Amino acid sequence: MTVAMLMLLSLLAENGNVVNKALASTAAAVSSPYFYNFNVAGTLEEASPMNSSTSPYWWLNSGGLMYLKDGVGQTVQGNLASTNKWRLLYASSNPVDTDNGYHPQNLFRLVTRNKWQNFSQQAYFKITRNNLSASSNRNQSNGFLLMNRYAADGQTLYYAGIRVDGYAVIKKKYFGSYTTLKLNKIFPGTWDRNTHPNLITENDGYNKWYGLKTVVQNMHDGRVHIQLYLDSGRTGTWKLVADAYDTSSVISGSNYAGIRTDFMDVIFEDYKMVNL
Image (cartoon, rainbow, N blue to C red; front, side):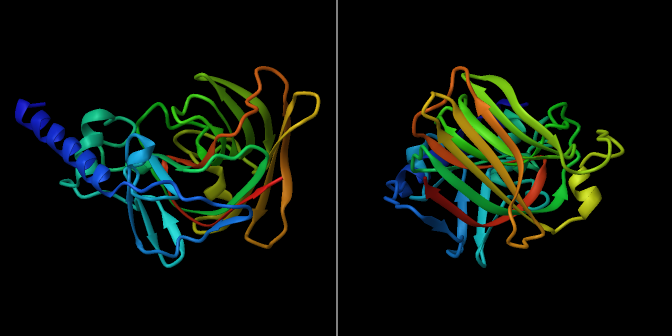
């Protein structure tokens, strides 16, 4: 990469930070139950740190851009323009995972700006496209997931959701180290990176709504109970698809929550949180 290109990328990053600081919003005070229906049209840009986010409700930690329109939120859909600021920045910082910056949505992380402890969290997801990146990080553990008790540095949290290999998963990341707490097969088939890269869309096609709900609660004996529910097809019926107890080095305090998607274009709506 030329010095001129590096200088351009540095300038874009600097200008982006100036804009974020100028438009930064204080986190909104929210109460339980909390609903967010994405009904304010606009675009939320990735920001760092959290307090430079232009939304009082959300922090886009990764993924470049989130679009809000007609009551839904969405990752970048398809390719960014070659001259887009985020295309250039990701082409410089992480070209492999983002297909030379054209798909920053491969690493989408949307985080609440309020902390929660014992709560349920839910949202509806629709996959519109798989991004079959050459990255080695495109693997069977990718999917769409809800994040719980998320530390701001992203190194400690619980997350739960549906993986592209057809499994419902509950997992812990603790100071950067991962532990799988539960893994249940819910979609048929055998995952293969090249021939069967996403068993969710292979079985149900694209544009089907899936509801995810997590329930996270501290127990009197010191354990943390995590449950994952699925509403397939948006029927209003929630099915328990994974249930786990964390018993060692538990994440017990209040922290952030949110949405994670990997190597796919996704639309989501009707986000809800309720204190237990």
